[in-house]
Image (cartoon, rainbow, N blue to C red):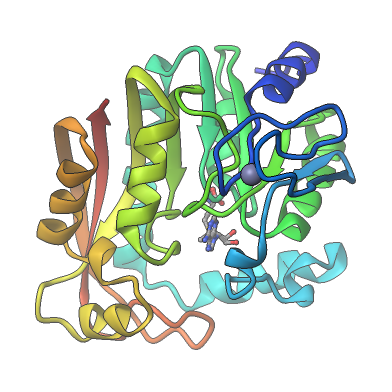
Length: 279
Ligand SMILES: C[S@@+](CC[C@H](N)C(=O)[O-])C[C@H]1O[C@@H](n2cnc3c(N)ncnc32)[C@H](O)[C@@H]1O
Ligand SMILES: [Zn+2]
């Protein structure tokens, strides 16, 4: 639903924190504990430190408005029909699930905003904050949504492993393919748990590969091992404190060779799931 985010932006100012100390920021966006200074540029809070210097950064060609559609089409051309069918079903199911989200919602690893868009397109009005480790993709997505929906979405550049939010900030945290891109699932799940309010909910579109698959082996080399297999990810969610964890499979499909993506590996079976959990 198209709405105006002025109130949410005021809420957001009260929720942001130093990603290291998790303490409030003063009027100059300096941490009230360690004095680290943060910025607000292009209408985006930049709440990252050197700890996130090695994190993923989008290549400029994906953020050039003239070329991004072409890149996306090219990416889509490597996805086989079987995968497209399951992914379509996955999105159809999540659209029903998001209707129950309420209160203040955070979208982890917003990227191009494919998931965020589902909230905008719903009949319901949501208060949802975009986050990603890369401020450039947030700026790109903000401009796109501004043009398309006349909507100025609130955004925070922050690392999923060190979230720049106070404890107990969110009623819901959601993500589509975020946790399979953030290394060290234990840190990311721990931060998700910390920043959820009591009884807050996690709702994510996620995918798994087999325990002994080539994808699982490669993911482990990039510190992504804990989020790629169901048993490991479930263990991490439990270890972080989450309760009532449900993992619903939408279907699976073999992954085709895709030179535009490192993971999964060609020929591996990928299972598409919707995960819900509660603090
Ligand atoms: C496949 S995209 C997710 C799709 C997106 N959620 C959507 O709805 O279109 C993966 C995203 O993860 C982000 N990412 C990678 N490492 C991250 C980290 N450490 N913390 C937060 N986001 C990260 C990338 O910048 C990228 O935008
Ligand atoms: Zn601090």
